[in-house]
Image (tube, rainbow, N blue to C red):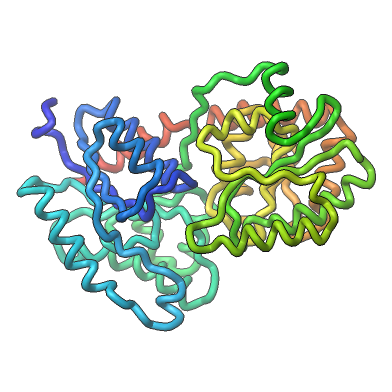
Length: 394
């Protein structure tokens, strides 16, 4: 089908980085562009540099830079919306000019916090899908605000896990009529590092030798990733297994560098500088995961899914995660990983020790985790489910 006969789907991305929801959006759009004969993706991104925008442009995906109306918690707390509505008028003008009369089959808002699609489609004969990647559980005003956005501004709401779906339907039961659950899809096409390659890279990146055990946390430095919780658990683990080392891979959000500074100071005050390595965000995350022995996802607040957990499972690594939100959908306790009691240092410590003390148990978990990730969380399955959703639009 020629390009001008394809149906246009306008995707609105909250950022141009390549974390979480942006990474999944890239996967979906890449699959649509390469394998769909029906749909033409158009991606709206904010005015910022980032790997998402770079990769889309390199694949000849149509990209439009404009305000995406990112709603921040501070706006709701203070009721100060600044140039919010002025930005909407500007974004609407930019999009309409770029479309130049082309019809839109669907607007797909990638996360709750980008409100352009909600405003643009409101009271128009235009189908709007909100793809929910977050559990907004606090404060209550925010929880209900975003639930009402879904109820009144979306034709369909796609939740990325059962936990996310259940959370919002429990908040407002009427959302059940609009809800669709589509698991996030993750693929690993990159080959595994050989043992020799892994050992060399461990030495270069983490100063970790052949007989040392490397425990890693991959994710942004922010309030909910649980870096301090893992540090405290690691202290106790290290007293029993002195060949263990800890590493953090990730960067803070722009303008929130204080989260990283706080962790660096915490490590120094704990006199653990020689045992902990911090690396900034890594685009080639699978190469990094291949160097790790155990991956920990110690989130202190509910996360809607757990992409790092699935990426690690696809890399045949044992994963320990908080028994919170979507992580409980991803991991089957003591079968494909270990779930620990959230915010509980002893529970996390016991989980790490269990893997260190029982090698056969760890290897069995790694095998089953790999199988589950391939079967339940593939990008092919995710894309097929979205295409089915788009096909159902009249």
